Image 1: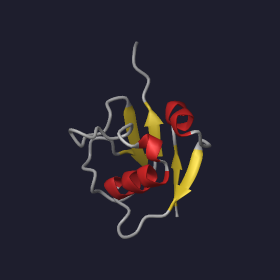
Image 2 (image 1 turned 120 degrees about the vertical axis):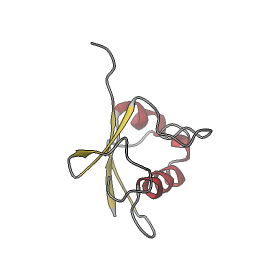
Image 3 (image 1 turned 90 degrees about the vertical axis):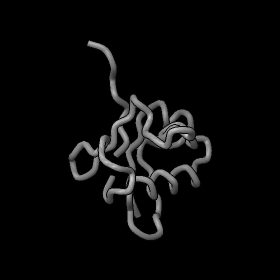
Length: 88
């Protein structure tokens, strides 16, 4: 089981608690975790990764083992989705 902490706007969109646990079959890459999360909570489909470009949404950051892995490929193993705050 993989524990995922979601930012407030994704919690509201999916009407779920801040932390959820999902099971991933095979390696726990970012892509596999996001796909399992979207399968369990279909309203999140396209909210984390753009459906057309396949890239993460700009105001979301991905963390695993206390490291920012937002700019690494989606096939890297490990995982925390955090809403970024824009502005000064």
